[in-house]
Image 1: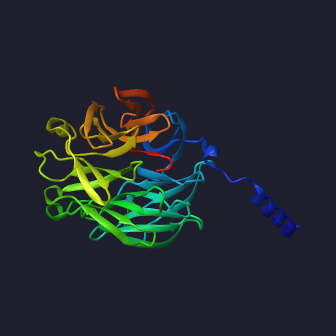
Image 2: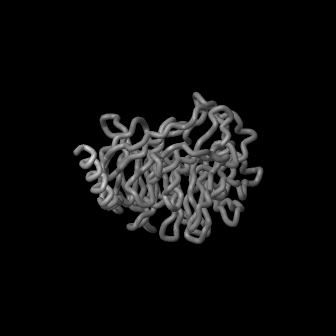
Image 3: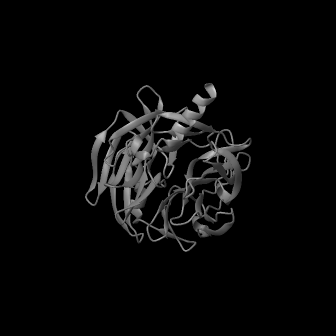
Length: 354
């Protein structure tokens, strides 16, 4: 009877419909936050920023990525991190906790292959900060199945290019001490964007000109024409103002400067980036500002918002989150607070599908 009962339950489970993101409330965004008790959470938000779920994290989160079909999110620890938590967002349960191999550290970001079978994670070798892309089998309990060289030092953000399984990696170029994150190579750093094919080959590297070699390339946004926008963080002379927006086009980098006084507003630091509605939005929590550029890289406007950092494009346009709990809509006339939750939003607002 036990055997027959087991077989019956197995057959029944096989006929159950697979869960989808609709079963998790059809979120448009994911965002890490800290609540008033000090607990760290991963939030699912609607297209208008309405909270749909809040699931616990073991420590401070940074970014996240969503499986393309299953309601599974992978939340990454703030770098240098030692965990990535895979969460079933429909059931509200963790289903796997990923740990990098010995001597490796997660670097805050990841993405899925187009079919959802493989998770790619941004990692570093702790000693020396050599970049690695971790490969995890999403069809087999997220087992580790290999790794690739990232093409540079200190990789951070990672995206899958549209209509392909090629990856674009922002190698920030900074070697850090594995314990206290002291920056060790500012005078010699060489950031790049690397394009990696599905067999792990570094197909192309694009570097900044020598005078911008201390502009660490950090975060990425995909444009619909195949280009990529990149947000940078300046590690050079703070008295200088340099372009914090860089466009990747046909494996070359094009710096996009703001007017000099507008450039100083950002204090040399772009925290997040997103594309939507023909505009590129760049945030600076240090400067308390959001800058907007056209898709051609031309500066449009600066809008002030204290501790603004997360930004993403969704069905209702661009949204911006800040450390004071606000969720604001961004349009041609500025930032418009839509709602406020009693949390401190962390660095990134992640649109599902990116």
